[in-house]
Length: 224
Image (cartoon, rainbow, N blue to C red; front, top):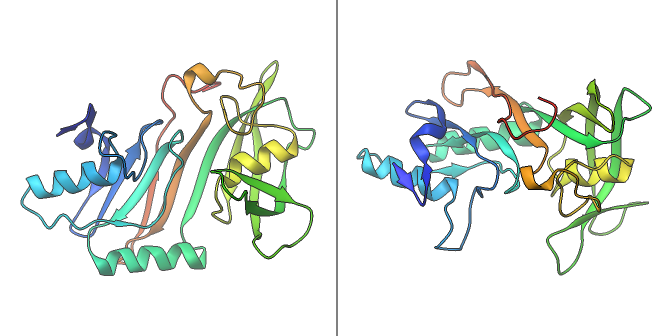
């Protein structure tokens, strides 16, 4: 089914009676209030309705609009609640690939910061100490590949804050290539943001079976 140019069926990696796992293209929002813009939620609901199924869809986690990669949705309230619970308890594992400017001195490490949203904007920032509105943000990184002026990192996301990976890597001194919000040089921006949610693992909300999915970034992604 084609929704404003997005063939939603081609994005589906796995589907059963309880969940849908998809690959979100970069540039497509998970949700939007703009009727003229395609989004994953609307496309999937239309797809379910066309099949004669209940078009219920639980959005349990999100990716920023420019980020590509894997998402899981619940097809009923019970599945949505159990998936959300796994996110809250840390049972859902998310691993990203990030192409960043420069080469970190430490080839692997942990970033732990206080992060807060910037009032009146769609931005976040790192603050030096805990504030009323800040929350702890934690990620682990490892350098996978080094180029002349950039490097490819594997990111294990431990918390899910607004723009977390983008903000923490920029604060570290290695902003993501193509990031128009947090990288002043915006290197490679014409090819989109160098961030991909490449791996996702969780327990099936009904059977308890461990589910693992992996995708490779598309051809526009740097260093892959």
